[in-house]
Image (cartoon, rainbow, N blue to C red; front, side, top):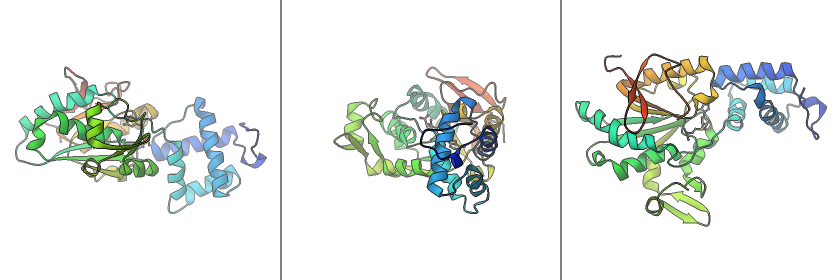
Length: 287
Ligand SMILES: C[S@@+](CC[C@H](N)C(=O)[O-])C[C@H]1O[C@@H](n2cnc3c(N)ncnc32)[C@H](O)[C@@H]1O
């Protein structure tokens, strides 16, 4: 049983409650909470029990499961997600994109269809906006090719922040000064991304663990799925890898976070060792 000094008896969350919740949340989001996350989870559950006035875990859990709009599940998801990100995180992959991946894509391309890139999860937008900046700054093909950048996350509040494009000094700390000056307006410690870049990325809410959400996401040439699979267990990683496979064009590329790997999860992809990074590729003959 977990208790806090100021917590009323009625909102105490038992081991059994935690297990029920853990299983439910896992099925809905793919996110698997270890026992070590108990304090983090309990604290947020208690906050939402109080905010909704449901009074007890049992009342709150009923609301979560049966509310037709799913609004409370979304609110809870928004506070349970870890949104850590920053501009140019794992920059070697953006270098790989412009120096190795895109040249291969355009070489094989028949016709003039746009190049489609999907960042899932995008969190507050630093990753897809970094992709856009890298294309503008370091890829000559941008003069010739249309590129669509779609950015998705399960968390609706973080998507609102991504669309607004307002960032802290910490978030932009690894951007070169000329890029900062070119793409942002700054006031005190806040950096506002310019409208042109904000409009270059389309943000949508997508749950990667929900097949009906991802059905409409197809024909991507490159998918960035970085620092999400670390929150999944093996079963949800497997499902996510199948979804990503479906979403990619034959020959499409997948970039994972530096501590993530497809090799143990799925044999669907080929490993490509480029000078800048290891990337996964969907076979050209695959449907
Ligand atoms: C640590 S951030 C990673 C952001 C960025 N890709 C990066 O590497 O900097 C993890 C993000 O995954 C999102 N997320 C968690 N579960 C998800 C799911 N089932 N579908 C889509 N996004 C999810 C969270 O909301 C959070 O914004």
